[in-house]
Image (cartoon, rainbow, N blue to C red; front, top):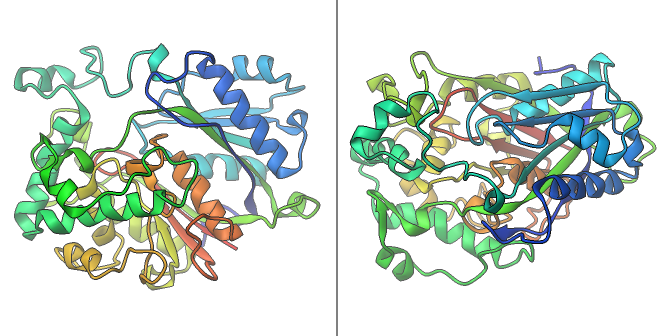
Length: 389
């Protein structure tokens, strides 16, 4: 059983240039969104006029009415947004788009994410009006690294994972980014660089934290039947799952009242089991993974939650070379991920997953047939997807 009828596929991807936060002075956030959509449609061999559905997530500011007008879409038949803060809904957008095209309510649905934070309030900036923030402010928890650090600290305490093991996540991301011309952080990074970098919120060092970027990316989803006449081999959406463990509430971005039993594990184990069951595959079948790397420790938690190694074993797993390209058993974040390519709240990871299945990545895994993509961990209603050839 799959998350949908297993007839949905991705046929087009598009990305704008990425710049550091505040780097776009000449273009608006809406124009970046439109550019990504236009590029995705062109990649799919479609006209922009063929698009009749739009999906986004995490309070994306580019409303469908603005996009329809700016792009000149003849008819918009479907528009929806996935709930959840930050990037927890990045993969759930695939479920929304797949259900729409399989149900026949739209023919070509575009998933998009656009950020131009230099022109708006930063998504991670403290805002007392957001739910749960009044519980955090008295303790100085004003930013995502500070809010997420207690979960990471608990995880390291329980598992005994060492800083030099944690560093492997950042080193791997930077190594992959050096092959990716779109990546913003392509300078070499050494273990010494990592260990000597400043502490942002213990145990998170500077290179454990994702970038803050502006830019946009998009994907086109349709059915396998419609994809037959399009230029690229379709990338199938084999399974998608979304969900939250009991008792997580507003999770790390709120009162921090998650269950003690999985406080240091992240909110994804139940959902991970479900996405594999729906895809009819297991961790051993995955060729490559794009794991949400807003902060390095959560990559290790994800590896354990998805069964690539046992509880507390992720440190040894990553330092064994398992996540490295090209020879690791599970190369991850082959574009450089959020730590080195750009932080687009998870959708850029889905784009890289498509490139891997197409055979077009700058760090291509040989004969990749199955790619796991995960969304933000540490929040509620997280999500994941399995893409296949």
